Image (cartoon, rainbow, N blue to C red; front, side, top):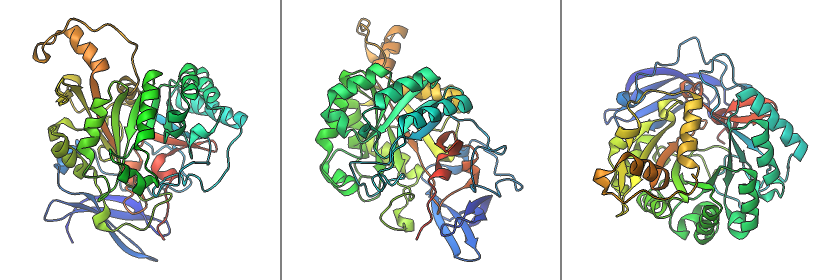
Length: 427
């Protein structure tokens, strides 16, 4: 057994019973989450692999107080123990889907249920009332299967949702430019595009079909409609973890239509092919180390999530140089690693993922001698953001992280942390 470095709470991955848990450090620097259920035995799962210094990354975040977290997630909604409000709220608008992906947190396509338009408008009003103008993410299933999606986007803006983001596989966007124009005219700000890599073989394994050409066309169509696109790869060891550098290069080549890449190390909830082994785990620090090596960027470029728990994600901003390389902006745009609130995070996301209006470029200047106007222009039109969200599943759930979740899901009147809403027992 390794050195115990932190106490927390978790759940049994079989029965989801709330349990005490501990984080332990192995001799090689790896951090494991350990817990034991009286009915189903003991479990150990890697949560950090020693590629980045653990203490430095935590930013002095205090551990979960011993008296808290004993009812999580239970019948969850944001309670008095929750430490932060909602930056982004996800609303499922359909359970239908035109793909059947191996990994899907929402089990898309297993049901044809679809809420009515009035039911969804009531939900949007309630989200705006409870969360004070959040970034609303319309999700599913595949939300573009709804013909009335532009009406929902327009209504969300009128109801007080500050930004609207679409979580999509992009297939209808590629095939129907007029549909994309309707979404743009309704006020859609961001397309969160499922995009796992730069080779069809990757899509065939994860999504069941060779989709690279159609997804690239979706980027082109959204770019023409001036909707910002963020690429969202699910990273699975042995499938696309060696393609990260090429994916970053692809994103840079397709800027400014593509505004960023938001990596999601695979988690095991919803639909997934089988219970994971320890070697299947792809931790946040390994993702950063692999990105740094493959994309040729400094490891120090990555910073912890601005308002969630530091172990939940990272962000990094870059200027795209004429030769395609990335110039880190962390030292320019962030004076410290201080935490922000959910509103700060929402505006950060909007600044980096939305498209800005066309404008005339200032007189050309050498990149190492930029005046302020040139820098601002390049920041708006020649930049790229890399970020990640390491979702939790029943094996690695850490209640300490759950208490500081600003990515929430609307579920029958309740605002729930994402990882609590989609928590799935292993079989």
